[in-house]
Image 1: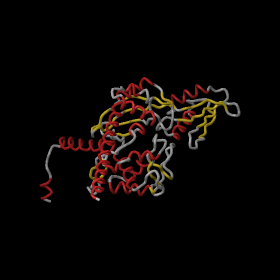
Image 2: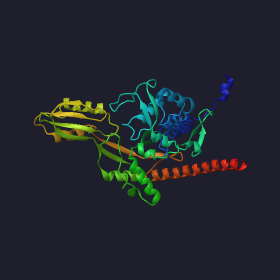
Image 3: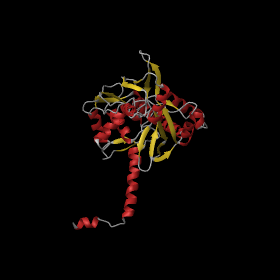
Image 4: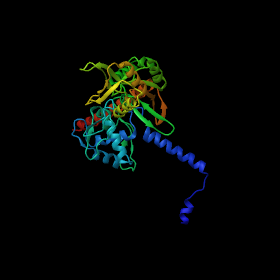
Length: 381
């Protein structure tokens, strides 16, 4: 007991809280919530893909049980909860959450209606082709490695990332005192913008927006407020208003109907349907006779209208009172050299290009070293 007393140091609680909270905040910011600008990955996603690569679960391989992947990640790289790791992997496989999924899932990986994925003992997974590109040439000393949590293994600090994943798939993260919310974008547009920046380093964000017209959400939708979008990409913050796609048509009986075929990003389809039903029940929207969800792989929600109703007025009410119109609050925050920064579109692409130049240089150095070693052997024969 006396030994314990000697180890206890008395100090003001304000000093202890200040220092400990800063340590906690930086741990969350750098190791949990914010992505690295170079590969667009949070540590858990990077570890999942690296573990899958070590297991040989490439795009051309057969899938293996998700529990195997989760166990590999937990045991070697990520000493946190198994549910957190599995949920992170599930999201990488969801085509309604990821513009370009990094994991190919077999089994129930959830739905846009908010249904949970099946337990990890039932599902199987492997990397997608894009994920393989994210790890391409990692064996050629193209990136730095660091010891894992217990010093028994090494893990990559960042992935080689042949594609600008931060912009392609976006991210959402809430840290301590800051957050990030980056939308997904179109691969062709982002690559064209990166090529332009390589050819013309003086290009402005406005120039790059000639290629990157705005977000490219996996669930579709139509984006408004173009001027606000340009300002948001230049400053790193701003609202993006998106509407679902809905058409007014006539059914076989000759009455009008509204058919919803696309919804805004991160909107739960089932909750949207329930909200519309509540508005009709409360008579805040009148003229609706019935509604049904005909969605299969694609979204199709049909709203039947009463004879003599005003379809456009009802549709406008849906935009006003439901998430059929939603605002995405863009917040381009990512880690640059381990420090969180609010970035413009141009800076994000500049950091990616700089990273790729370093990867290509290190790959060439490695190939040269191997070739010289081979030459030495051949000359000695």
